Image (cartoon, rainbow, N blue to C red):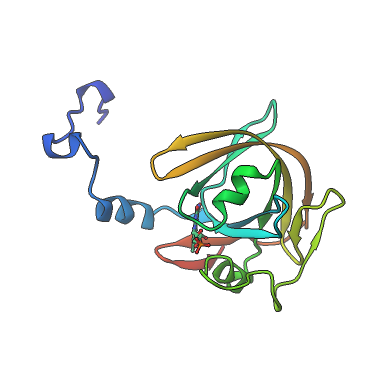
Length: 173
Ligand SMILES: Cc1cc2nc3c(=O)[nH]c(=O)nc-3n(C[C@H](O)[C@H](O)[C@H](O)COP(=O)(O)O)c2cc1C
């Protein structure tokens, strides 16, 4: 059966605010996503956070997007940094994902291993690959901002399996 979008009518109660938060979360628990850590340094030391919101956006020019919450500790840095790095986590790197989603710790302290790219951005050692990004747009989106960025460099560790997040936990293929 085909249901055209124009024939859909949203329930009146949801029209003003949108679907309830629990229903929203329930839907996305069923949606598997790759796991990355976004890192940057706006001149006040390295910052980074675990993210599943990375999307491939455009091939010409090569653009990606990711979402970042405006109440997160990383946001003021991402807002000011001209560049950032997307670190693709490998299947075995769930502890790194947990570290970069934990509040109030030094995420770059041992056992995290990291270095700087020639241009100065922090990059995590041992990841399955990374993209170096130059920010092009910061788009307001509710309690988040969408960062649209140009991919200016890419390194890939061929043959690595990705880390996935699904139904509240980490998985490999
Ligand atoms: C699997 C997973 C995916 C996440 N994806 C995002 C994301 O795409 N954008 C975002 O802003 N935070 C995301 N977070 C939350 C951040 O990693 C982090 O927990 C949050 O920024 C809180 O950091 P803070 O205590 O430094 O403010 C995700 C967390 C997890 C565990």
